[in-house]
Image 1 (cartoon, rainbow, N blue to C red):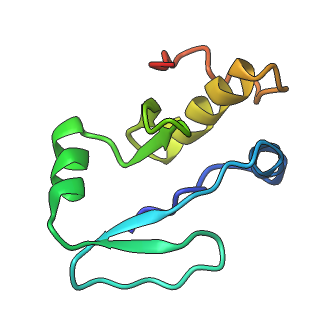
Image 2: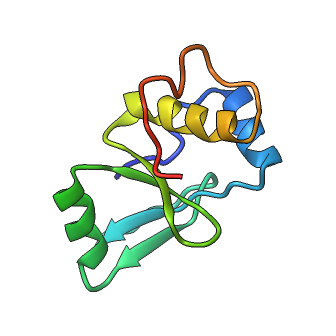
Amino acid sequence: MVRPRAGLDATTRAALADLGVSCASILPQGRSAHSRECPAYVDVTGKYGAWFKAADVDRILVRPDDYIFGVARHDGEAPLLVGALLAHFGRSRLSGAGEQLRSTA
């Protein structure tokens, strides 16, 4: 199971909370997870899992209007994705974060 906030430090998590960003895990059918950090939802049709696999990503950042802001392929890209979001809102970002990632926003 991918932990949505893995790779993000406390300062970054606080900045996301200040923006009202929430997280969720999408699990394949038959798996369950308990997390204080993020709710987990089961992909009963397998469509989400197929999309993540086809797109070769394990995280997406979705805007409130349901458009994808950006994606991350692994834990190491999560800070870059979040850095791009924070930069978009004029917030302090992690050192170098967002400079290597192009978002779709």
